Length: 320
Image 1 (cartoon, one colour):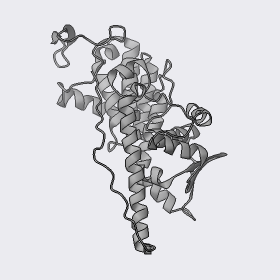
Image 2 (cartoon, helix red, strand yellow; image 1 turned 180 degrees about the horizontal axis):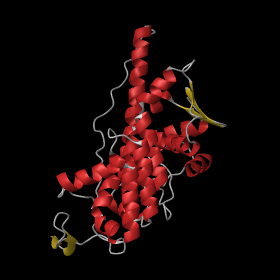
Image 3 (spheres, one colour; image 1 turned 90 degrees about the horizontal axis):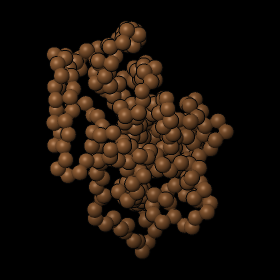
Image 4 (tube, one colour; image 1 turned 45 degrees about the vertical axis):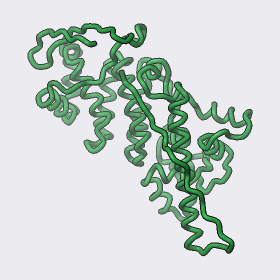
C-alpha cells in the first residue's frame, strides 16, 4: 500500500523584537524578511496540518483509490469566501488574500485573467518565477499569457492550496493534464507541484487507464517535453511498459504499435531495454488489491502468480 506521513513543524515561532525608537532601514528590512519567513512557516504548517486532518487531501493509497487529493476547486473556494466568516487558519487566510486581492504586492496576468498574488507565496515556491518577476520593469506584474491558460490557472491554485482540481474520467483519466502540469512545474522548478502531478499520473496510469492509445500518446508527449534531469514521468511509463510487457507483445497489432512508438521515441526504447537488462528485479509500484476488495486485515495474506521478467516462467509470490 502507498502510505503518506506528514510531520508538522514543532516549536513556537520566534517573536519579533520591539523598539522604543523607529528602527533603522537595515533593521526594518531584516524584520520584513523575518515576517515573510514567519508567514511562509505558518503556510507550510497549515498545509501539513490539513493533509493530516483532511482525508480528502491525503495522498495515501486509500484516498487515491476513492477520491482525488485535489478536491478543493477554485470555484468551491471562491464560494466559501463569499459565504463564510473570517479565515480560521493561516492557509485559509492566504487563500482569502488571493481571492480578495488583499495585501497583494504582485499581479499575475494571463490574457484577461488577473490574480492579485503575493511575492512571499509565489517566489518562495519557485526561484524561476522569482527571477522572472525581478526581470520585469517594476517587479510587480508578471505576464504568463504565453503559457497554457488551464495549466497556469491550476498552478495558481496549487501555489495557494497545495493541490489542484482535476476530473479523472475515462479514457484519459486526466493523464494529459498531469503531464502538462509536470512539464510546467519542471520549467518553473515548483518541486511540490512536480511531485504531486507525477504521483497522480502514476496512480491513474497503473490503476485506471486501459486504453493503449492513451498510454502511447503519453509516452510521446513525455519524451518530447521532458529531460533525463526530470525523469519522474519517464520512469512511470517505462515501468508500466515492463510490467505489462507480455500484453504489449502478445497481440500482433498491439506489438506492432508498441514497436512503432519505440522506434519513433528512441530514448523510450533505450530506457525500457535498460530497465529490462540492468534491473530485472527492480520493484515496480503496483496496487495491492482491487478497489472492490479494500485493504487486507491484519495477518491476512494472499498469493499472486506472475511471469519472471528474465526467463518467462510462472512464479508464485506469497504476500503476508
